[in-house]
Length: 73
Image (cartoon, rainbow, N blue to C red; front, side, top):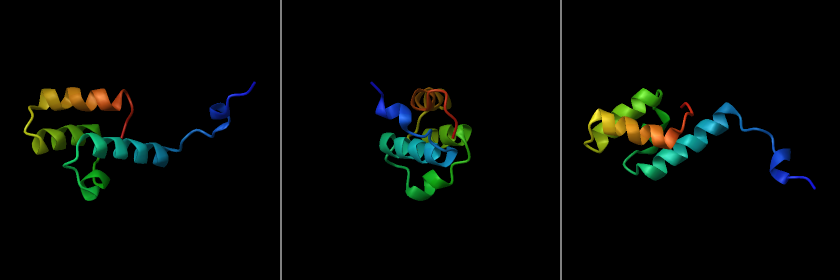
């Protein structure tokens, strides 16, 4: 018995980034497509989340860490 998912090629870095950007957009709806495409990394995302949602940086960092689960942007 084979697992169909194991036959799938691993996602490329560009595909992974697009998946992450979609997850960010779904969680934080205040981000425009332009905001998402201009993100420069996780620290930039934390800063933007804190700013757009009036959160302190520590809370924004926790929220971003929970979404990213060790992945990088």
